[in-house]
Length: 150
Image (cartoon, rainbow, N blue to C red):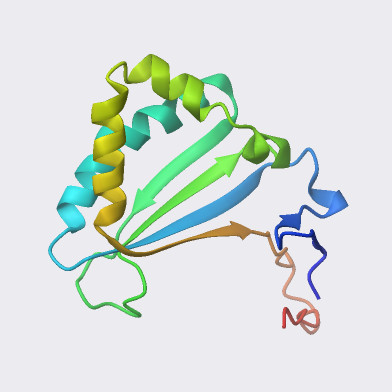
């Protein structure tokens, strides 16, 4: 059973133990066939500067972007994953993007058009807040019983 509580609209609230701690989230993208490079280019040109500005303010602690090394490795659910380490749950809920976007991209219409194009290149996109699972340091004794999430 998840320690998060469901709200009226189906969103989840963080467990009490998560407040004040950094939170990692993975943002998965599956691009349409032949659109991977254009999607990455648009992400780097239009979204990365916004994330970088938030990293400079401390709202975001770290950002990584990764793609499978080889075509066809593993499941074909995604071909780009961006992992963001947020300062805490409050940082996820803040909405400073519009202010930063206005400052970084004075031509709002051009930026909005490229962002629409970036999302038009996707077949799927999903966000996954990650919860750390502690691993034991010592190899003594049996491993602890795993929690079942379902």
